[in-house]
Image (cartoon, rainbow, N blue to C red; front, side):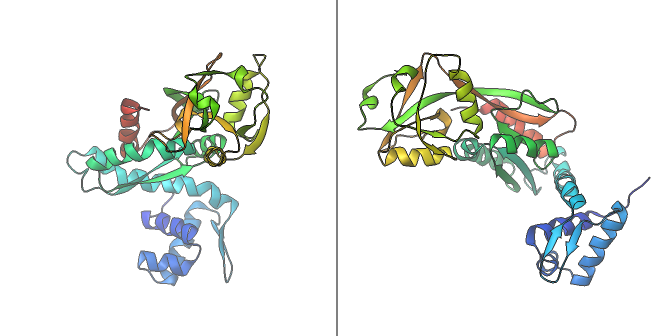
Length: 298
């Protein structure tokens, strides 16, 4: 069976979802609202199911529409990026690469890599989905993101995990804290201390608890936060010390904070690239993924 629709039909659907109204989407596409409605109706007829639920004030995706949206984004991205495989058009080609990544990668590493990539492909944009580790995996698996940067995923059968670097857990403390004078610390040194850590729902916490469960170390988490950056804010205020991955700490000299290696045992998380086992990256995403694999440094 042949399904007939146009690329502009997909663009119309995506813009209505992003902007929330037919009026705004029609203005963005330089179409009349009736013309935009016909585009959406044509796409729904081709696919055999409604994509949008319409009311006088609000537009929402149907269950089918939510399933189609990530696929529609990928079809548009792949079409726009195919020209990258043709020699000499990289500097003229526009497009977008969508990446699902844990926040520490989005904050500390990816900006440098994106800047380097844009030196060669200045019109290729990026959509960064900074999500929890589990949410980022789901985003890659569903096709919403082309690939991901994560520290979990090797156990999922539908995803392929390529290790890039080991990211050890360290102690973050103020420069005026007694621990700041130590060259390294053992986990045992942290017992009975006022510790700041991420919540039990965090992938980092699960990894850390699992590693320390094999030892006799028992830590007391006095403060629990959802985001690693929040724990650093509490440390800055002198409320305690925090255990977090080195990538989540300031990479330059900080006026208030410093990090101390933790040993006995050394606990690390493996940062890597997560991709679907079935499917192919667009040329732009493939080139960026290969650049990451060849230049990851911390």
